[in-house]
Amino acid sequence: MDANELLTRYVNGETKFIEANLNGVNLFGADLIGIDLNKADLRNAILIFSYLNRGILNQANLVCTKLSGANLNQASLISANLHDANLHGATLQGADLRNANLTLAYMLDTNLMNADLRGADLSGANLTGACLRGANLREEKRMYSASLRGANLHKADLRGADLTGVDLSKVNLSGANLSEATLRYADLSDANLSEAILYNASLADTNIGGANLKGANLMNARLERSNLIDAELTGVNLYGAIMPDAKLTRCQMSGANLSFARLNRVDLSRANLRGANLTEADLVDAYLARTDLTGANLSKANLIRAEMSSTNLTGADLRGAVMPDGTIND
Amino acid sequence: MKTISSLDAVTKDLEQHENSKRIKKLIYSACKNIWENDQETLDRFNLQELIQELSRLNPTINNLNYTLSKVVKTLNKQAEYALIASVISQAMHKLYIMPDESTGILLNQPNQDESTGILLNQSNQDEQIFYHPGQILSNYIDPNSQIKHQYNQFDLRQNIMKYTNPLRAKIVLFSALYKKFTFNEEDWLKLKAEKLDNLLLRLFDTCPTIRELESKLNSAVISLGKPDENIQAASAIIQSMRGLYNNISSSDNRYQPFNSDSSPETRTPVNPHQKIALKDDNNTCQFLVPPIKE
Image (cartoon, rainbow over all chains, first blue to last red; front, side, top):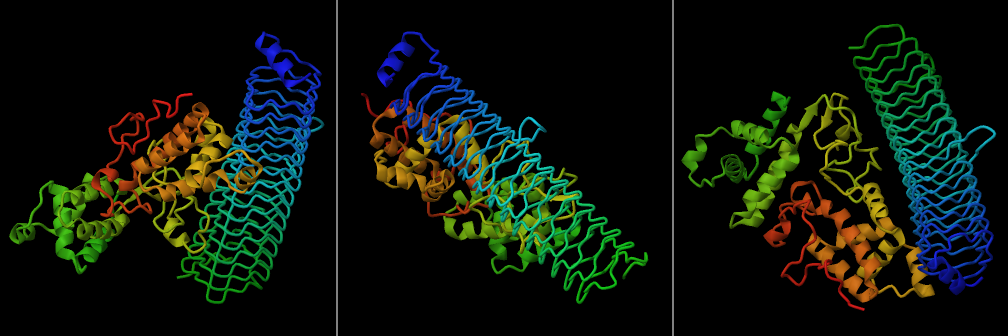
């Protein structure tokens, strides 16, 4: 079927084009709202600026399809194959992309607000500047398991997104906004989160080992039991963060702001906290073996029962701090 | 609420300033709505009380900036008094700490990188930014507040994506900033190299007033020819960015509220609910009428 035939039939009221062969057709700017293209072959087709709002494209073959600027709001793309598709500046708000193949898809500045991406494979996709606000990528056992391995999410908007259990290891999330996002049980090991905004994010039981969080904002984030071993946290803002039982072994945290953070039972052994701000931090039962707190501000911190026998406190400010034995410094 | 000690400090700061006389004149005028040149009259008023009155009359720092800039606009020596207003605003900033606010993202600090409106680099600013949980700066953004105080790239991008096609918006922005987008391979490559964020920020940086922004986008729409979708995109951009200009005269923005270089009317806050209307001025965008009839 060629483009003209499709458009003529669509204008005449036909909407179902199931399994149609539209390989390589040019439908630039075409108005195909609500069209049913289930299992259609649209490989290499040109659908730039087309209107496919509420279209049904389940299991459609969209490999290498040019969809830049296309409108796919509320479209159904369940298990569609969008490998290497160009979705530059396309809009897929509220689209159903469950189990879609989006590997190597080009999604610069794409609107994916509230999209259902459970089980979608976004490995190697370029999502720079994309808006994934409220998107759902949540892992569900034996049902959905989204992957973002090697994806680029630089400056992406992921506010409020559900990324529970998602594999984000080694992903570039630099400058991304993950405020209020849920990342529980996610794998962020070796991810690049430099300058990322994680305000109020939920990161409990998350693996963030070896990740780069330089200059990130984690104010009021929840990091209970999280693994941050060997993470780069220089200059990070963890003001008021709730992180009991977190593992921070060998973390680079110089100049970090940990004031009012809840750090009960954390393992900070061999961590570098030079010049860090720990004002009024709660460090009850913390493990501070060989922790470097040179020049750190620990005023009014609570260090009851903390293990500090090998801690370096040179030049640290301990005014009003409660020491391990319960004594209060002047 | 506003602690005595900080009020003392502010008063001392302003009293000891080399322009303390002008400072007092401006504060007096902002309080009393009348310009007073008579030194004797001014002497009868205690500076500390005037400062207190001024802060009471202006519950937020933005109100204060707006009030001050309004007075400055009525004066002959605008440039001089713009600087004085800026001194007062900076000194009085300390007085604007509100208690018992729920904790929120502090998006608006005087010292941060203003291009983003987001705390990206706080390592050296923590001391100034983060107070005890009970004391949050008044310019912390209340999620319910409709006032947008500063450029927030994420909010702006989200709004534009919600109300128009992101790629169409990029094409209009590209044409407004560089040259008409021609849909050839070379232009596509150039557009791929640009993030929507960067194009928006560049336009904001280039246009000191909403009028200039409208005019630039209008020209771009005309040059692009096929109007409908481009007009829709341009309108969405203008609507989304209008808020950023509304508060310029009253926020700690790069466009100094007291900058006397631009004409006074350009600094007049625009009614946020005002529609893009036809105006006599040719520089103004006229989106109600398509620029080109096909």
